[in-house]
Amino acid sequence: MNAKKIIGLMMIITLLSTSCSDFFDNDPKTALTEEEAYLNHTEALIGSLYNQWRDIRKDRGGLMFQLGSDESQQGAFQVSTDRDQAALDRYDGSLSPSNNALTQQWDSRWRLVSAAAKAVKNLEINTPEELKPLLGEACFIRAVLNFELTQYWGEIPLIDAKITPVHGLTRQPLALVYDLIIKDLERAEQYLPEKQTDKRKVSKGAAQALLGKVYLSALIESGIRDYAKAAEYFKKVIDNGNYRLVANYADLFDPNKPNTTESIYEYQFSIVYPDNNQIQWQTGSRALADVANGYCYFGGYDLILPTIYCYNNASEGGIWEDGDLRKSESIRYDFQYDDYKPTLPGGFGGDELDPHIKKYEDKRTDRVTSFWYSGKNVHYLRLADIYLCYAECLNETGKTSDAVNIVNANIRSRAWGGSLPDNKKWSTGMSQEDFRKNIMDERMRELCFEGWRRMDLIRTGKFVELVKTHNKWTKASGTIQQFHSRYPIPLTEIKQNEDISEEDQNPGYGNY
Image (cartoon, rainbow, N blue to C red; front, side, top):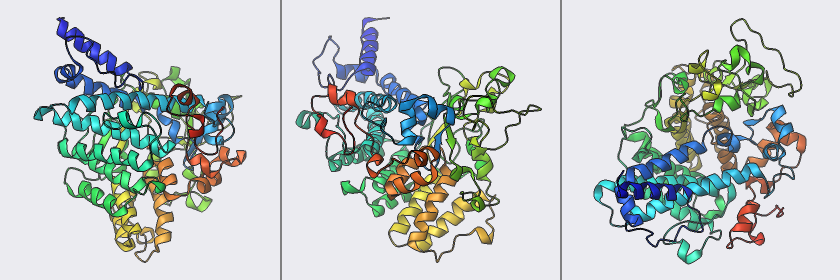
């Protein structure tokens, strides 16, 4: 291996281990400058960003933000054995700046934001035209992470070659945060191609879809939320011809049918280490964990389960209507494995045979390998979500009947096999307020466990009301308050970042 390649590999290692504090230490350390290293090793460097982004979504960590909602909650054994993790459902005193479960989520994202920002900085400098799509990819990844961070933590530092030298790494006003997110996504829209043959890579449609999400979901106090702009971007995705709904909802979760026509972007996994995702390990039932030497594809360890509201029928106070085909594809109710009828294992909490998440079961592992090797692709953006978001925007801009028609024709029709019974059609005379309630339930039916629920609850102002009503552990604790819609800034960040003091903590939290 020649010296130039060795230096290039060193630059990759530097990218992966970079921190906020040394991000702008840009003096060349060798004869090959950082900018030159990027130009010579761009594909590998951007590839490393995709790998890090994907790996945030796998295993236990990839499910943390789904806890503590009206849609999903921890299993009984899990909530009784890890105080920090339990706090994500209980909203008690352990949901504090020293909470390790949240600190891990914060840290993993900031490592990637820093790496993506370095990529953006270097690709902005005299970038050849053929590398502009890679700049768009780096901008997209930085935007994704900044969007998540600000939705869940509020004001955040910004790592950017123009902003950081002026403002440092203190928490920035929401308007400035969203301005950078939007600018990154606008560049991604400009530079990304319409289609990518490499499915690990994002396309123009993904940038447009996420721009719509940003304008739809921006925290209200930012002044950025704009339903009309959001609708424009969602309409671009719907009309561009590159995506269409699959006819059969089950196909979306068939591991043998990845990257369907409905997929705008999904994380690419396989059942081969290190590209497996371990999600079934976390979502399956402990009662099945040892069946067939651990090769039962719906065994697991009960990290995250549907709430009663999420798995019950409407007649029982839940969300599911008779005939909705999405129910059996989303949630497992029957745990019989061949001739084996599982019984509740002792000492684990008693909910191991309650309904579990089915969407991530990977039958390819059955009788072949441990369910730890589960590796279905994981949806990030898909067209059905965009239709629902677009309908929500139409309702908010006074076009409720149009919104109803979109949901009936595209989402609910498919849920009943392509022919929606008259008694299941939403009325075009529905009020704006009724639509708001109905669309939240419809989003849960269509998108449960796909990672958007917490954002939906915060966006609609229903976070406290619905979580304390439907989440078993939140209701039992009785301590959830409005300030919990933001997570606490980790204590490690306050101690290590000289630009963030204890006074900068989110309201409602002490610094302990």
